[in-house]
Image 1: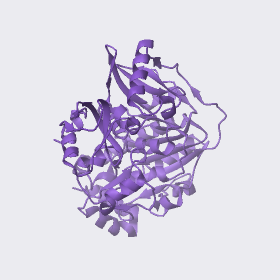
Image 2: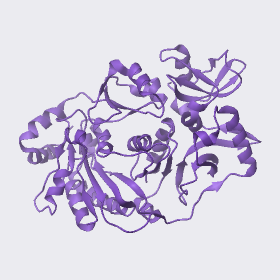
Image 3: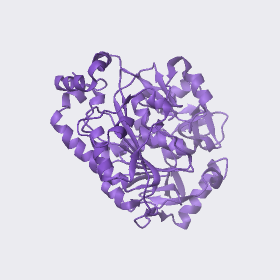
Image 4: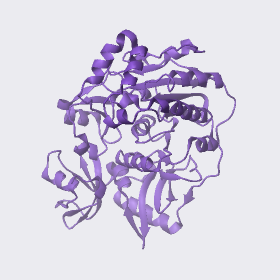
Length: 461
């Protein structure tokens, strides 16, 4: 149910466009979309497999409207070759040209759509600091990072003021997809309308302003700050930007790329705004202009600042013991088809809680609340490695032993159900199941039978 008070406010905001907005909002058809993950599957293979079900979005190279509804059961979803994401949520990161090798941060990252999108954009030569303060949502974030085979990310579970105490002028881009009142989700999630309360909007706006201020401290001179919400209220959007510009004159609002501008509306200039021309450069994604739910986005650039990039903490990176190093390197030499330093140059074996991980030696690990770092290898016990799902997902393309199964095969269905599958032509050892070349998960081949190492929580039941 759409709250009446919300509709009355939108009528005032949109004027002549309100009827078109209202009609789109009342459309009961949910919009489904997917994003192609180039780290897992070649674009040609993806397009060949999904061609009948997808339509490309004009403002992104990797986003598509999708006719399939239960995409979470699709093998390519299991493989992390696609990510289900609203078209509006894909738009913010297409506001600017993100470059390979950038050092970026996602301050409010769960469930991981923008983090995994960023990771593909900056590549293994770049780095993504992905943070989520809510622990259950942080677990979801880490799960998506693992499924999409991301290798260049550290996931943390802290508040944004802690992040600003760790990083000073470090990032080429900081993304703040801020927690909000969720007005853009009313059509997609009925509970969003049921829980909406206009009295919460000022509280959301205050929290967002604090997050923005914390994020500003971590942007390098010449770097960018990208603010987005999935709500329509001026208080949480343009008013926050206007307030931020007053407090941070070193930042200015940038024009977005033409493809995003073409499918969005200008930001709203409210009475009393101190930066009206800047607010017009902000973008509003509406369901009557483009398929998808609501989204606000504003791109800012830090134009002044002489401080040098600094890590304001001592590295918590703990090297594995010599014995563990030897066991891991021998294991990786056995299962991979290329030397590790060719696959992931600059990565080292480090202790991460109970696990061993491959982490970049160019980025010191934060001192606490690191939930995931780099690629989780697994555990070492009695001189043997028990591999983690993340290793199969992230480095599966480089495994010697591969069992490639077709999309519609009984064997693939059996594997995703958790069953063993025949592998009569494969040698004994750890390997991966792939579909169209995209690694799904692990197996251990023993005498022609592939024992299933796909995590129970991910299986099709």
